[in-house]
Structures are given as structure tokens and as C-alpha cells.
Amino acid sequence: QLLEYNTTYTNWLPIAMNLVNNAALRAFRASHGIGDNINAARVAYDPFPLTSAESKPSNAQFLSAGLIGLYIALGFSAIPGLQALRVVKEREVKCKQQQFIMGMKPAAYWVGNLMWDSLQYLVPWVLCLLILYFVGTSAFRAGNNFFAVAVLLLLYGITNPCLVYAISFMFDKHTSAQTF
Image 1 (cartoon, helix red, strand yellow):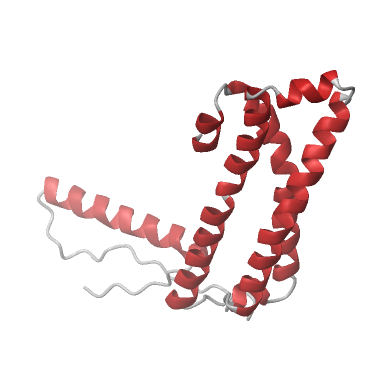
Image 2: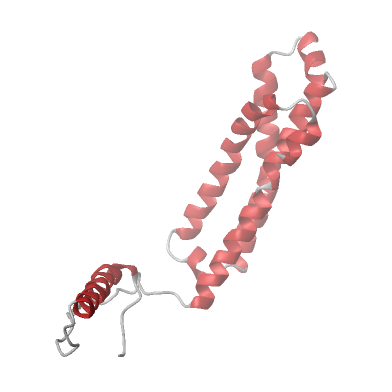
């Protein structure tokens, strides 16, 4: 028996229900000794054709975009460890305490760290955007996708140090903070 079906996500439910119902019908026939001369249930499903925006990318495009996303995620995963390393090491060697004794306000210390970490983040952010624009697949460049990815990565870089600073108090040694 030949089974042909559309693999897009909108078509799977009627097809899956048909396969389950046919399997149940075959099991019922076999358990009651009924021959296989009764036709199975059939489903006819004719969805609207896909628009150009909904067209399915090729497997190569899908794999390429997925690998680029994975490489970006791996690259950006090292940044929080480096940010935590410096903050915990300053606390470990009492540099932070010395700054507070000398008259620095805690708010100025944390805002200064946030500004420094955000400025350091701009270098990998710009390099990542250049790689995505010139090497990345069309999925990253089509429509407003590039702008959306750029804003998303920029917001990650600005907000991530705040979480890193909050979590950094869990560590007493800078080496453990970097590897967490």
C-alpha cells in the first residue's frame, strides 16, 4: 500500500488520526475474525497552497541556518563566564572592598561594570552580525529578520550582565564562577 502525504505541520493531524483509526479497524477485524475485504477509512485533505513566505526551505538551508544558530549560541555562551570571572575575582582579592573604602558608591561600581561589560560585548556583537550578513543563509537576511536578530542579540548583551552579577554572589572562587 502506497502512503503519500504532505509533511508540513498543518497536515499531520488528519493523517495521523486516519492511520490510528485504520490500525484500530484492522485490530478489530483480526480479533473478531472478519476478513480484510472491507475498505479502510480514507481521508481527503486539500489545504490551501503555501504562499511564498510559507514555502518550505530545503534541507540544506535548514541545516545551514541551524548550524549557524548553534555556532552563535556556543560563541555567546562564553561571555557570561568571562563577566562573572572578573566580578568574583575583584571580590576574592578584596579589590571591590578597597574601592568602597576609598569612597566609591556601590551604584557607581555596578553601573561602571555594566557599562564596561556592555562595551566589551559590542565587539563580538558586531562580528557576529557581519558573519550573519555575509556568510549566513537567506533566512537571516530576508525581510526584517536581520534587524530582529541584531536587536535580539544586542538586548541579550545588555541584559545578561545583570543576571551574571546576581548569580556571581554564589561563588567564592573566580575559577568556579567561570566554569559554571
